[in-house]
Length: 84
Image 1 (cartoon, rainbow, N blue to C red):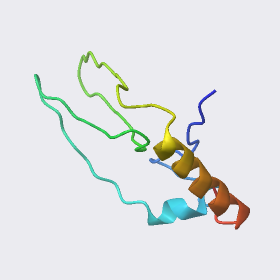
Image 2: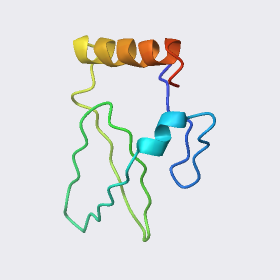
Image 3: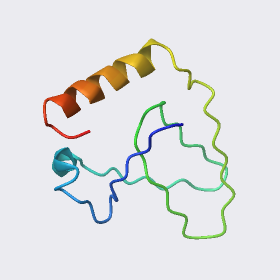
Image 4: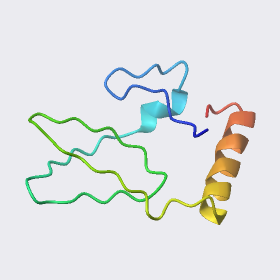
């Protein structure tokens, strides 16, 4: 299984996710023929305003040292009571 964040960026539950208070949105508009690259492990939300065909391909998503490091940090934050 893969863990997904359960916070809703449009209406976050700060009690369940207190660190979400520090999150800042970056809004990007992608036009026809354009591509948006998001590095692996980046949290994001997608909204389409028109008919859209979207393709996700996680070519760089491997469970290597980056994944292990991110999981370690998240687990440590959770143990320290900082959420996660």
